[in-house]
Amino acid sequence: MNELKKLRDRISYGIIGLLWINFVLIVVRNLVREEGTDWTMILATLALLVPATLLWTRDRTGATTRMVTSMANAATVAILVFAFQGSPLQIDIHMYFFASLAICAAWIDWRAIIGYAALVAVHHLLLYIAMPLAVFPGDSDFSRVVLHAVVLIVQSVVLIALTSAVVRAFDVSDQAVADAVAAEREAVEMADHVKRTDAAAEADRRKREAEKAREAEEVDYAVSELAKSLQKLAEGDLSERARRRAAELARDVDVRVRPPTNGEPAETARTGTRLVTITGRIASAGNDRLPAPGSVLRRVFKEKEHEVTVLPQGFEYDGKVYRSLSAVATAITGSHWNGFLFFGLTRKGVA
Image 1 (cartoon, rainbow, N blue to C red):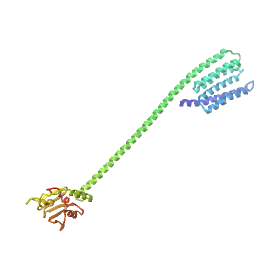
Image 2 (cartoon, rainbow, N blue to C red):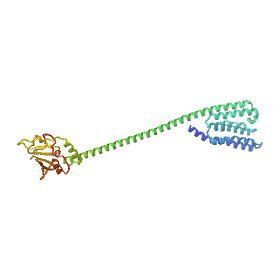
Image 3 (tube, one colour):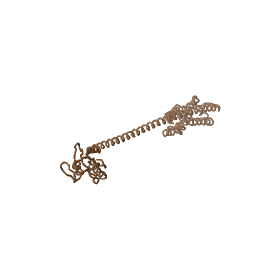
Image 4 (cartoon, rainbow, N blue to C red):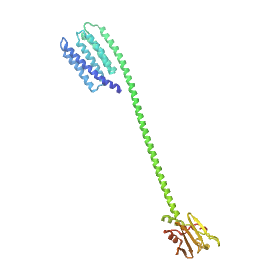
């Protein structure tokens, strides 16, 4: 109970202070007594106060401190009553017992109240029997002791009920504070969790966006490279690797030409973006991979038309005779080409 402990801590200074106020009153009373100073009384008071004060310095609000300081207050009041022995004010000093008990009730501890009341009861009873004048002035009877005991009991019961209610109120207050702190802590934790979740979601979103951006870049790059390759393919400007692959494919192709009949116009074959024209007579069926000698092959390459004449032994191009179509294709393109593939002679019966 943090708040109750704080309250007891503040009250403890007042209760310890009250002990030393009682000591001062006892000393002053001894200084003005007709009988003179009773140093035994003063030393006995110090013997009570010093241990109680030392205990308080070590544990200001502990249960033992509350009990000892309350009973020490009751003892100092009893010594003060004894100091007024023979004085008409002695009976009035008895009221200080009840006032001091109310002050000690500020400890808000029923055990401190019972300890105080028990010491006062034992004090009254024993001294009434052993030394009546140390308790009451003049002639007294047991009924006065009983009256004081009844008042003390009633006051103690009321104070115990009051302190119990205060303790319950502090319990409820502390529980409410604890619930509020727990709720606040839970709210903070939930807020932190939401922040972490949002941060994770944001990081995941950025990661996905980065992956999509990379994929888009890769697609754009692939499309760009493909477009460049297609453009080169359209212009006949293929890489050496592509040409080798085309040559490999061409070697596996059974190329045949369907020659035109007498009087028929030359046949034109379109392969991709290449335009190939074949004119002249067609060789016999035994030599159907090539047009007959005298035939002319035309091919448009890099916006220029090239004509190749088929000879009985080779091919004539640009005033020179070549042994194969591949040699002619190499001369035209500047790199190795399969002649049949270059001139579009890739299907049987169609050129």
